[in-house]
Image (tube, rainbow, N blue to C red; front, side, top):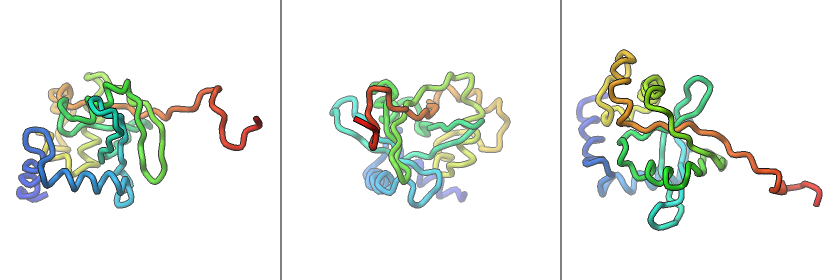
Amino acid sequence: MPAWWDRYHRWMYRAGRPNWWARPQNRISAVLGGLLSTRMVALEVTGRRTGRVVSFPLVMTDYGGERYLVAMLGEQTNWVKNVRAAGGRAVLRHGRRETVRLDEVEVDARAPILRRYLALAPGARPHVPVDRRAPLANFERLAAQYPVFRVTIERPGPSVISRGAAR
């Protein structure tokens, strides 16, 4: 990517938060929720302060047969705080809705997932200070700064009656 592209993305998320220009772009991306990209999802999670459902556009990363979400802006990202406050309960939208549980990945297991994430999410590259082709050791050094969550589909329990089941 050209240098101006990196500067533009850093400007949109200065101080780790979306600015006046990035906010409406994020809303549009969250509404589209994957229509333009096979990796784009919309994460819906209950806001820790308002109690309202908040939607965030994210890039889904796959690694080792599992799916992951990565916080490109680090620990202070609102969606990370909301997911933690919600006990990992969330919904992913990508054409259909999936009720999921997001489990935080231990720091020592994050490096290969972070490298895969940067390979798939060009918009995240200006926010993570390592080249996507760098050795794994470079990712290990900054893994603690970037939360990673494993996505697990929540199956309804036995007390939930599914559509079409005998009553």
